[in-house]
Image (tube, rainbow, N blue to C red):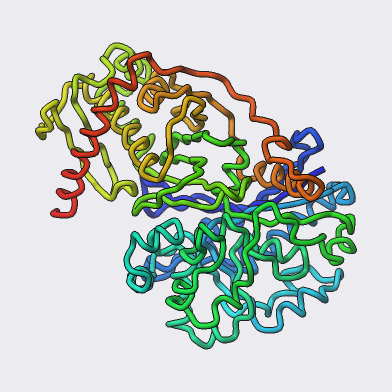
Length: 539
């Protein structure tokens, strides 16, 4: 049996910037056939109200600083393990475990904490035993956007935003860990000096299980603006730009399939784990999702939800100012790319309401009847400020690249869908993705049930689209990674050999003339996008 747990991240609901969806800690156990045999979760707000969080976080008065209590995460783990024990779950059968944490969060262990981890007593719950172990009690997390000054300093220190992306896979982002560390060092130097080890949320959780400081894995580590994604070591320029003595506080980074140790005596005595249970390096939630979707070399995963997200398996990355390149969590010599598009289903629903009487059937019929390529008409639809690219507003262009104020309703619908997918292909290729004959697109999310939308996706990428079910993909990904981690110790077996491809259904294939039709349109779309971005900057 393999087992994992996941500390989920919250996501803002873009219909109301003040709404934060609930956070929770989840657990899943799978058997030898990778079938789920146990599931449970702890809701931070509901089950642990004493920490006073909303959506598992504290939003500070400046609205930019967002943190989560470290002890809340630990107490949630205590709660879920106690529930499992009370339910009769047999921990002795767990052969390996792994997990995932929200990317970009960081935990600051106080001097002397390693000795405490080494000598935990099974009579005490973890949140009591470790309550004095953290120099920073509330951890900065991915929602924090208070480090703009630190970001600019880091970029300047290495020669600019593009150079930082070339080294670390991303330009400087406020939520990335290096910039968060720099802020703590600058504003709270005494806390920084008292810190013995800095963990990511993922490696922090793994540390709890092994009773020692767990190394950061390559994949989650590449979301810090600190790791050189090419040689897989901390970059000295980036470290020096953030804080002194940082290399020692971070420890070494390791491949994501590494067994970081056996489960500690504490868990053997308190819960009945086998002393031979292996702990495989924990990773971030996005890399874990790639594993959970069982992507293979050359695949693209497209999640079509409130926001749209692309996961790409890349061998030769070309880091850019948009998007992120991470080390691949299941094949360390390769890479994964991540692209987020904020205006996803909410924009599709808005145009559906305005142009097809709120009917998906009518919307789909328009896509069936209108010609691919939309007679040269192109559209950009950003209800809220987009991430990729950074632009806002609605922009329409005719076949001569002239701006127009409106389209006919059927033209509007196709312009929206074609524009969304052309942007995805353009940005994927800028990051180094190459469309190959064997390329498969794995589609998930609400809009993946619409065959007409998927047909446009297939035509623009010139690749077949398969649909997959990905409930709890990050959780499952870590159970799969646990299985791979113990298998690879015996022989150099691939992740795909351990975890067979996910069940998927071929939805659509590209039309014969699609590539010839869309190649010039993709070029035009990129040219028009430059005008859109300039107009956004000038507003």
